[in-house]
Image (tube, rainbow, N blue to C red; front, side):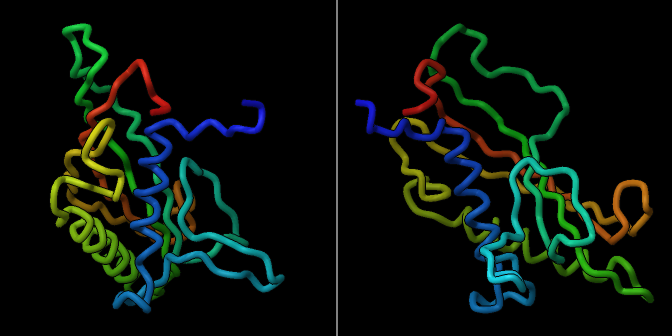
Length: 180
């Protein structure tokens, strides 16, 4: 068993699959912007979609996305004490875009529209196999996409224009077996 690698917990698998949807936003898939992985100028693999990252610098690529958990409190859906739960997992997609000096929010509107479009396409699946994680056992049973919010650069939150898209994933999970 020492050579066996434990699987990722269910929520991490969901987060990775969710980011995979966002990384599919690329000109090769009919989009204007490119959020796919790339090779940087030094020849190293690099990403434009991050999980849980909140601090960025001048050397980070634009455009880029970060997937964060919504910090607002939420009520548990398993008040019965059952280990089987249907939970609402609220995420925020924060996107940063290059500046447009005359109309700072224009690139943010384009980027958020492409993010929403990619997520809407992920919703159109048969047999409730959202994000390709299956429909038996722990799975994602629904995706709700909220209204994007767009903000100009302000040097407090961001030196470039950005947007936030709230997304709620409905998860069917067994609390006793998060690695299943």
